[in-house]
Image (cartoon, rainbow, N blue to C red; front, side, top):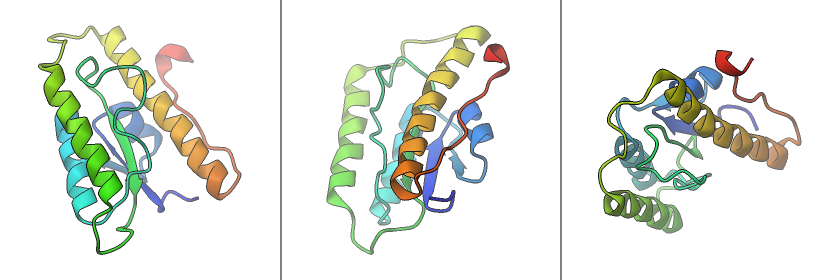
Length: 144
């Protein structure tokens, strides 16, 4: 599976740097990422990862990445994808305001890396399913 078969919607600079040819940058919050994903689902794209993947609640981290199909799968809305992204938006709303006001740089790096590792695992699974090949993972200077 090459980078043109999926699109990563993200507000995470580490994810954007790791897969620059596959990323659509969202300048904003997790809520903004979810809105962008929902808009793509309305246009016929399909979710390839769950927007609530991982063990970090969406109001506990400032970063979120979601993988969708790069092109609309059909002219019809994928109802499963729509149900999932709208459900994630409800969960985020119900959790309330973000739990962070100021994040120290080292902790911010950790949040970026957690989200990036989730994407690396998901992309590796996508590559394994389509091409049976490896994919490069996340790299940060703090962990090299």
